Length: 454
Ligand SMILES: Nc1nc2c(c(=O)[nH]1)N[C@H]1C(S)=C(S)[C@@H](COP(=O)(O)OP(=O)(O)OC[C@H]3O[C@@H](n4cnc5c(N)ncnc54)[C@H](O)[C@@H]3O)O[C@H]1N2
Ligand code: MOO
Figure: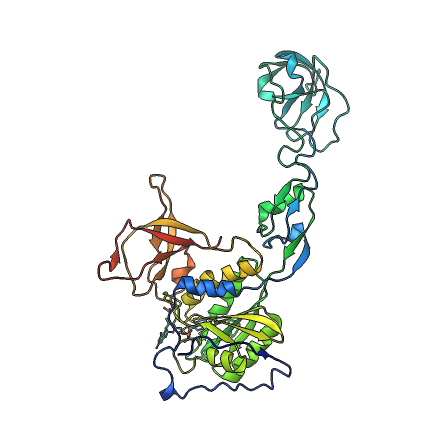
């Protein structure tokens, strides 16, 4: 049984890709394997093999404003306190709390965006303040405008001369002291933190305008199969289909801020496949292919990887639906480690396995410490018939405040060719394989669900 083929040799890609010929021996159709020579492993085992082969990449410095989707290479500390000055929380009046309730003379205005007022608030006086404005010296409380009334105004009503405070303020009321959100030098985020929109906001507000991040892996996406036509071809030829996997996978990677490029469509010809793989591996850290990994005589990926690229195939059969023939290999190409995920060609299989293997792998290689997908529990809206393989059933989720768990609604027929089942999906239910005792899960059953797109 072929289980793992050693990759001690490095593949040297010198020479023109257009000249190279595959040496892969493709078995004659009558002599092909009738059973896969690879053991059927669990999803957990497959994930562990993929993750243990993720290799760290180097770091780079980026502008914080352009850091969305990166993860921090090192801990980051605040360069400024937030707020940088004691600030009013309300539109109202800066006062001295000890003066209590009663009349006050209005001596001026401190509004957001001006330098802290030099004029001091003294006993019996107050200063108008806006939300976010610096507190004037002398004042130790803010009284909101709702708790005051005007006693004397200027003739034209454009100035308040005297007001009455209706409720006695307490010291510190409605003031954000300097550094109360974040103090100067405080640890903001530790290394491995994913940089999302709010992290960028925190960093910029604390004066951190550049950060050191992990480089992201570059992914090449390759489709395989003679039946495939580019979406840019004006007319679909007989017996052909549009290559939807490549654009779906490229879009998925884009959605997750992972850099990726189109590596083309390989014909069912080992030499053409090898040429496109070589071209892709010259640049990419990870090569993702779809199709050509099952039991057909045109399933050429593994022979080419093993023979021509001296790759080590870690697994090629996973006990899951969809995604059974998912293949994972590693090789050394031009002296550099490369990871190859051979996803099944069926469109749903390619997307589901991307969520289970490709995205966590990319997150881990991008340095994200929490690279696992989020899993919740959900209740089935209706019964489901279980499959002999553990199934990743596509669902939408709804929430009613009367329930303690979200409800999962199937997206309909779950054939791995029907991408519509994935189109509106918000989660993948992790259904157990069928047993004699339990062929069906009844409505209301609670199952675990992988949340998509977060
Ligand atoms: N004898 C067996 N046959 C099959 C088995 C098996 O265990 N024994 N497994 C089945 C399962 S499960 C899957 S999944 C598929 C996977 O096959 P391949 O990965 O080899 O994919 P292909 O045969 O190349 O294509 C399958 C299907 O997907 C369409 N396809 C392929 N690429 C694209 C693309 N880029 N865009 C859109 N659609 C694509 C292709 O035309 C086929 O219809 O194998 C089963 N067979
Ligand atoms: O495992 Mo295949 O991916 O069912 O269609």
